[in-house]
Length: 101
Image (cartoon, rainbow, N blue to C red; front, side, top):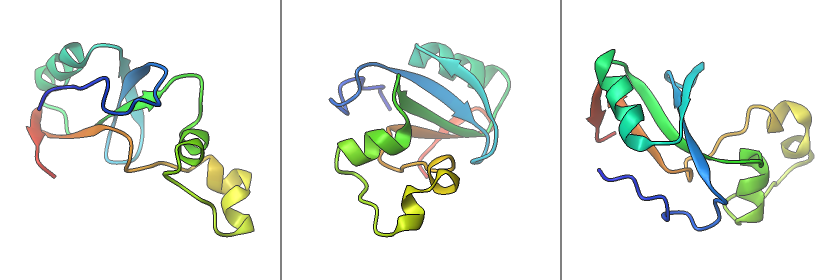
C-alpha cells in the first residue's frame, strides 16, 4: 500500500503515530518509509495512523463532518480525550508486515 499524503485534503500536514492495539503510541514519524522500516526491523504489531497536526482528532472529525455529536456526553472531556476515528488514514501491521485488516 502506498502512503498518500493527499488522501485527506483537510490535513494541514501530518505525522504518523505507531500505536500498539489501541493502547500506547510508541513512536512518531514524518516519513512513511522510515516508519515501515522501524516496524519491520522489530517485527512489531499495531496500527500506523496519519494524524492531524496542531489539531485534535475530535476537532478534526467534527470540522470535516466525519463526526457529529448526538449527546451531551459526547462533548465532555472524558469522551473527547479518548476519541479516535476510523476515518484517519491508517495501516495495520502484524509481526512487522502490513496486514489487510
